[in-house]
Amino acid sequence: MTKVLHTESAPAAIGPYVQGVDLGNMVLTSGQIPVNPVTGDVPEAIADQARQSLENVKAVVESSGLTVADIVKLTVFVKDLNDFGTVNEVYGKFFDEHNVANYPARSCVEVARLPKDVNIEIEAIAVRK
Image (tube, rainbow, N blue to C red; front, side, top):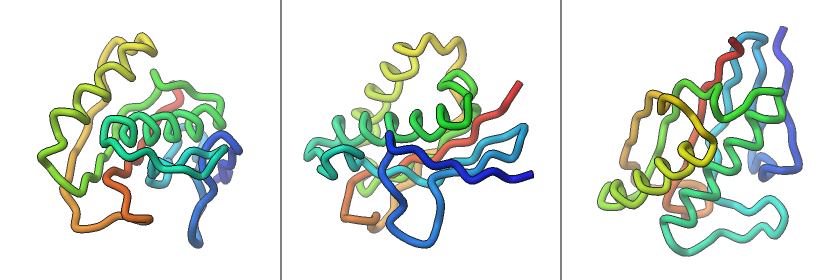
């Protein structure tokens, strides 16, 4: 049974899609852009955008009852692959703060453009163990 995930702790979908779905054993998030769910603001710096996108992914995953430690795969979309080092730094700190023993698998892809002209979007797969 598929359950649609929705949380006020992540930005609402800006199109005909949902924040995520819970398939029972697996949770899939839609791509999370760095919109602050309270203010609607997008930070300027790529480090801050990366952090906000990760926080939004976390909120959707947690709305299913899972945690950051249950994330097994992320896909990161960036407008400029020159930001890869900065994103890596933020990414590592984020998972370290959540005491994740092993980082999830990850892909990072440069794209021409993202919604709202942000610099990053992140989607995740989490598994219920």
